[in-house]
Length: 87
Image 1 (cartoon, rainbow, N blue to C red):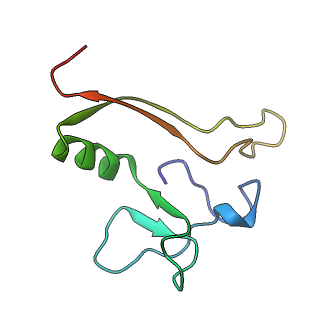
Image 2: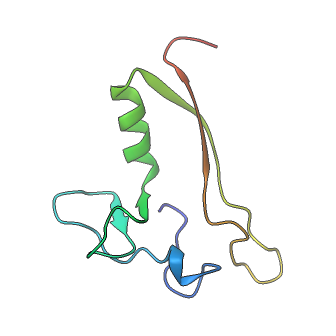
């Protein structure tokens, strides 16, 4: 969600996250009627969940963006994790 710029900035309406559920800061869903279908998280939420699981975020590879249109080519980020304290 940190790089999400709103409706019309994604490759598909399937990647529009305009519904933040109550009591869940840093999270948004595509469809409030079926919230588990598509969920977006802020980086801080992912980092906190990783820490609580004994992991750490090594790197977040953000979705590639088309240099001409500024729209995302692939809307999903890749999160690389490792066990906390290992290299």
